[in-house]
Each structure stands twice: as C-alpha cells, then as structure tokens.
Length: 271
Image (cartoon, rainbow, N blue to C red; front, side, top):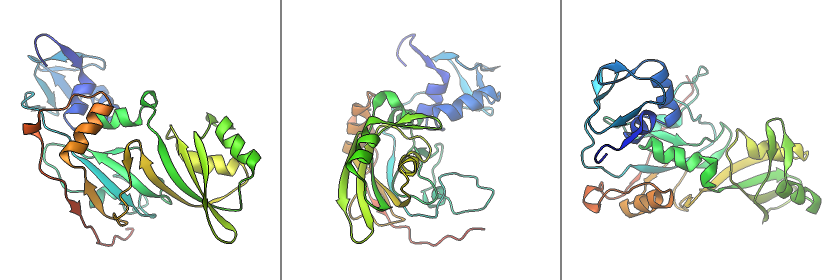
C-alpha cells in the first residue's frame, strides 16, 4: 500500500489468501489477529507500516504481488463443499492441490446432490467479489425435471416467486430438450442462495432430478473437463477476471506458471 493509504484489516487478510472476508472477520473477532502487537478489532484499518500477525505469525510485507490461482472443478454428485462434515462424506477439498502460506476458498457452493462447475481461488477478495450481489455475476444451470414447464410457470420463474427467505427470480429460462417424461431447462440467476434453483422448481410443484451448474459469470465449465477433474486458469484469463471485477492485476512478470489440467481419479468413500 503506497504512502499512508490504509485498507480494512479483513480485506488485507483475504487478499493474502488466508480465507474469505467472512472467515477473516471471525478470526479477528476471535482475537487471533494482532496489529503492532495489539489484538485487533473488527473494522480496524492498517497501512504499509503496520505489522499484522495471525496466531502470532507475522504476515510477510506486501512484496511483489502475484496473480491469485483460480481452479475450475467439475464437481460430481456425492461430494460436500465443506472441510468439516460430521457425517464423514467426501469433500471437494480433498481433491485440491496442497498450498503453502495460502488457502483455497470456494466461490459459492453446490449442494451434495448437485454437480458441475465449482470455482476455487487463493484470493478471498476475488471470491468475495464473485459472490457479492452488487457485481451481478450470472449463474447458469442445466436443470432436469419430471414434466414440462408451462408458459405460465416460465413467466412466474422470470417475474419472481416468493420463498421462505424472500422473492427469487430467474433472469432467463430456456428449454434444453429431453426425451420421454424428463425435460431439460437452462436457467440463469444472479444470486446464489442455498438450494435456490431446486426451491424455485419445487414451488411450482416440479421436482428437480438433476442439477448441473455450467457457468459462473465469465467462467464456463470446460467441455472436456470430466467429473472429478481440475483445471487451472491461464495467467491471462486470471488477469481478465481480476479486471472484470475491478481488482488490481499485478504486472505480467509476477504471474505464475502456465495452466495445467490435473486428473484426479481417486475414489473416495464416506468414513
């Protein structure tokens, strides 16, 4: 941070790749963070000369910035988007590459029975911007239901349906074909409330038999990325994503290595 410029502490910690802003706020509230040797308070602002430590470990000074890593994961059904699960179900985090001095942050979630595109990044600030409603990033899903939507039902999805936690709506609904009693639809929303797509269709009396996210903002599920596989964004793509979200991009010489696809074919069993 040049000069006397300051930044919110939780934002600084998230940019350091330690977790999401919400995680960092919890760490600060729990007394795990100090600034210049004094336990930090939520909302504190820090500058370039401040010494910030987490659990007694001083964060390195803002050395040359590096591009955050961004992974695209083709999540299969039967995995949970959580590091801790009392039921011992397989976790998507078990398949991610190990990091030193950083942490993978999931951009949104997919429920246990849903599949498709899941995005991970080492930048909590990037994750926060992708998820925040103010940026209006679209989420596109392929939805399979038993039955066919009527014109009236499509109109209700677009105009808005009142759910337990407020009104929700789709920006667009398009038929994706299908055979027999099962029909596919492509729906686009700009929010990521818990089970929002399933709940919208349930409100119409239709049960979703399969739900697959195919796009999150500008990031689409690569057609050749099989279930359980990971693909890292190329440096140029990561820079474009940062620019789109209004985040500063480090100079090209600070970029990381080329993208590569990681094949993860190990099977996991629930404990």
